[in-house]
Image (cartoon, rainbow, N blue to C red; front, side):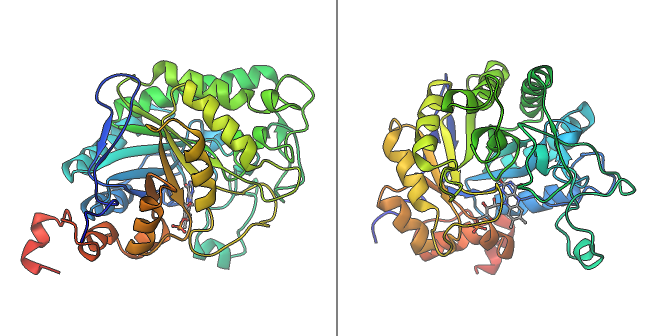
Length: 369
Ligand SMILES: Cc1cc2nc3c(=O)[nH]c(=O)nc-3n(C[C@H](O)[C@H](O)[C@H](O)COP(=O)(O)O)c2cc1C
């Protein structure tokens, strides 16, 4: 059997130094855990186990869930954050454990904008009818956005002033500095799924008439400022990434042509890791099914210099399917979400299926599963 591409090591370049070496191209994408019962954004033993078990499960890179840069940027009050030092200290043992298992540690920095202040996506909350915007009694807060929109079906968000935009850009940089101190190797800026950055990018949600709305240059100004501010403080020898929605899947919305142009621009600002998801503004109108977002990754990969690390995500569940995406040069890596929730050892099992040496933990060797 030829050597598996999925299990061929790869390096995500940094702006200086050796870059981030990954033992393989299987990535655990960020997945909200809605588990911070104290509502203080401080990660707990749940994050250690959730991320740690996928690190020991053989993934090359594990990325922590949407981690708010400011408290009001949380999707729910059960989210994690990186807006203070207590959170930095709590992330440290988690990144250390990930490293001890041979994986790299990434964090998705996030601001939910108009989609903040909602109930966490938990069965017990849904059964109690607690969905959508958090009530005031449950601690809801005023959300902010590019420009108010009915598209989210949530409590109305306030339009950000220029001063608020400038403060917000600074808060991404502050969180990036804390991510470095916490021991993360890679930042993935959350620019997808209808959250704040995407709220600026999409013509569906951005009706501003100042320099942050209207033309492509104006709608992309906020993300370019965020990336520049993060790049200014994030160590040059660490890897910088972004997740983008490649399509709104709506006519006259944000689309793959605009995404490709943005990816090229962000590459020049130092971004080297690109994860291509889609949608998030308004109801979903796109395709579904195995690998449905892979063409978005393929389009971005074809337009970027060869050293960019482009990952595909979305219903990639089988080792052979992942291998096919890579050997046909549609992406450089694959993000495995729900399949990895069901099987923390997904990557080690995929290695076995593809005839590659896995990273089975020493503790499990006697079991030889
Ligand atoms: C429980 C859960 C939480 C998620 N939270 C996030 C998140 O924090 N940030 C994000 O960008 N995507 C999030 N997603 C989307 C996943 O990262 C991934 O893109 C999506 O599940 C599609 O990949 P899959 O088909 O392999 O699961 C979440 C998905 C799930 C199932």
